[in-house]
Image (cartoon, rainbow, N blue to C red; front, top):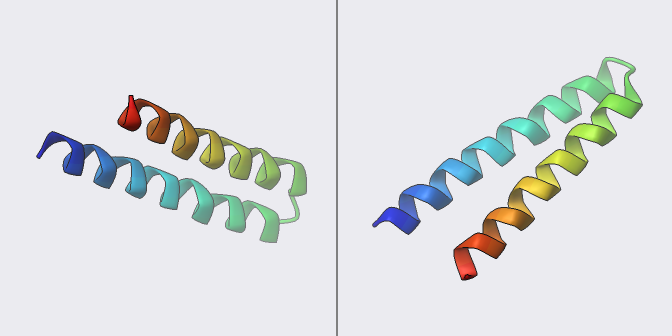
Length: 53
């Protein structure tokens, strides 16, 4: 049960970061948008690492 809640929270956070990255790129801030995509990737990858451990 805890893992399901954890995955839902990570999924929501990652989705919000990606959506804000898209908004940032559309607002003509490409470096900030790329940084947000990198942050979303790091969030998802570290959570998967801790989930499998």
